[in-house]
Image (tube, rainbow, N blue to C red; front, side, top):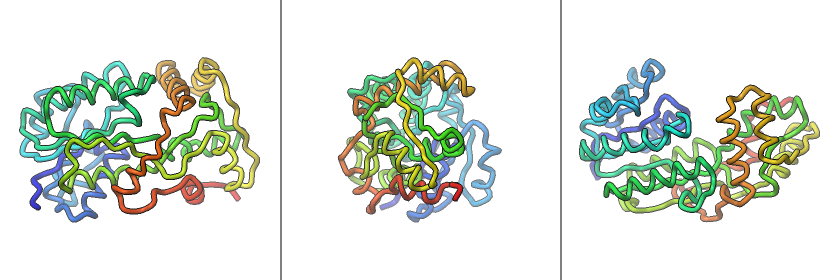
Length: 291
C-alpha cells in the first residue's frame, strides 16, 4: 500500500511528536510526514531529519489549507486552546482537510464523547458530529486520560502526601501518551479503519484511591486520596496557580470520572498496538520517584 504524505497537527506538543516518531518506526519515510504546529522552531530537529515542517495555526483557515496541501491522511490532535475556542478551531482544520482532499481524518477525541457530560466531552462530541456532517472518511480515537497527568504531579503529591481530586471511586482507564501515539500511527498507516470508533484506555483501570496506594507502594512514602466536592477541588487548583477556567474544566473532568466517563474495558488500545498497554505500576516505576 502506498500512502501519500501524512499530516500530524500539534507536532510541537507531546502527543504529536510521539506520533511522528511512531510513524517513522512503522516505516513511513520522513519525506512522507508533514509535521505542523504554531511554533515550528520547536520542531526544527524534525526538519533536520527530513520531515516536512509547516506552520499551522488552527485560527488561520487559509494557512491551514497551505499547511495541509498534498496530504492524503491527517491526524487532528484536539486543540489545547481555551475550551470555548476548541470546536471552532477543530472545524477550521476539518474544513481545510476537506478543501485539500485528504482521504482520511483521524481525530483524538475522548472516551464516550457521544454521551459524556463534561465540558471537555461536549467539545469532542461536537467535533465528532461536525466530522460526520462533512462526510470526510474519519476514524475516532477516543483517548482516555494520560498516565502522565498523574506521574507529572508526583513531586507535588509526594510533598503533600495526598492525591487531591473529585472523582470519588470512579474508575479511570488511563494509558501512556506513547501508547496513544502508537494507536494513531496504526490507523494512519493501515487500511480498514475508516468509520471506526475506538474507545482507548489501559487494560488496568484504577480509582484515585488506588492511585494513591500505588504511589505509596512505588515510592515508599504514605500517600492518601482526598476526595473533594467539585467546587472545592476547583478552588484547590486555583490556589495552586491554575487559571480559574482551567481549574473548573479539570474539576468538571473529575466529576465525569466519578460517573465512569473515563472508564473503558473495550480492549481497543491493546488490539490496535498489538501489545499490552503500559500499566500504572510500570509508569510509576520509571517516573522520578525518591527511594
